[in-house]
Image (cartoon, rainbow, N blue to C red; front, top):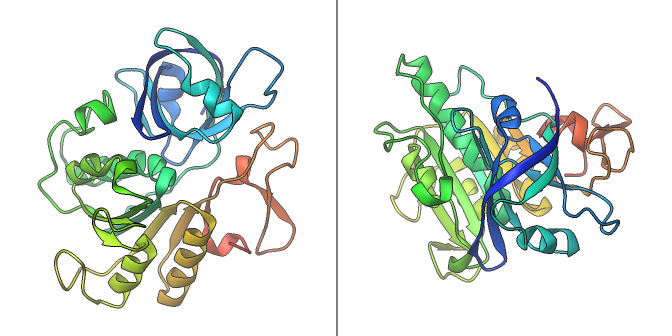
Length: 298
């Protein structure tokens, strides 16, 4: 896998929810090598401030179209500058960076847990799991996604078979994105909102706990089959609960950690996390995806 360092043209940059933007970049070099869970490091301006790049997870990559997509929330100066970028402008990026989510060949029922903007890289993961399953079954190779927010379906046609289950949580109904794409990829999608404006009022980890206990699902009563792997991305409390539940249930689980990064390539030690084996690992280089037993203090 090669690292691209250069400029990519912006094909689109639109607000899809209050303060949440979807950007499409024309960058065949990154699209060719990107894996779900990896990120790109974006320079937000040519000026000296803000000096540091911003790490943003890859929400989709299409080798055929040569495009890379990111979904980001405006939270500070850097992302405000990104939100102001226009179609046709060039953006200085590095990527793909980090280690992504593994998709073992034995996976039969994956469960994906996402919180807020952490849902973004899970869209790429969902499509990749679907491609993996269909390829294993001898289905034709899938072409990928032209634009995940416009088509709502990265895989051409909705999947006919059950692929897995997704629990995603948002503050409110207005912030929900990606649900239709997840459904079209063959996942049963359960939506949570903090305020109860859509779906279950509560957190996606509440639903995961119901699932693990074989309790009632808000939409369909008893749930099955048994989970054999869990993937998660979102705020720290969500990841901590996922790790705890997965450990008790003896289910392998992979989480994507978020941290402020300076270099993005493991040189500055600015994004260190405690390793379960002692010492530290670097989120940008050793992660951002880790098996939950690898790290402490989730």
